[in-house]
Amino acid sequence: MGDLRELSDEDLALRARTEPHGAFEVLFERHRGPLYNFLLRQGADAGRVDDLFQVTFFKAFRALPGFREESRFKTWLYTIAVHVLTDDRRATLRRGPTTEIRETMLVTEPELPRRDEIDLVKTALDQVPANHRRLFTLVRFQGLPIAEAAKAVGMTPAAAKVTLFRTTRRVGELLSPAREKMK
Image (cartoon, rainbow, N blue to C red; front, side, top):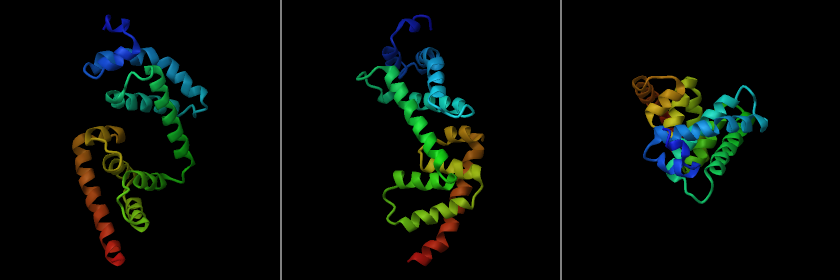
């Protein structure tokens, strides 16, 4: 990794597409202190800074294929951090997790024809355990692979597959009578 440390941030970002563990680790080491301090200075809740920091780097890692040399890596990384902060502030202003699910559905599922159907899904999701709802939302609405969503909610991938299957079936069962009434 010694030779990687001599590369610019932009070269490391481009190289991280094919050598993620080495190149991205160097980027992480370079920017972790300044980014953490940035998040603290932006008025983020001190108890949330660690989470926001991890989310920022996770999103940056996942978005590396889209990095273009049109801007500096640092600018790109801090843009992601600002978005993470904005999302976190919005989430704290919402009234509970079901509002977040509803808004996620409105953004990611524009093909849903009616608002009352969105309300039905929200109501159905309100009736499943919180960790099942989070897993369902991460996979179905946010598009995370099951393995990553499982890690995010503290499950093994095998347990997450079973939970996702059962939650999907349960939500479907809860939606069936309501959809019949709407016809």
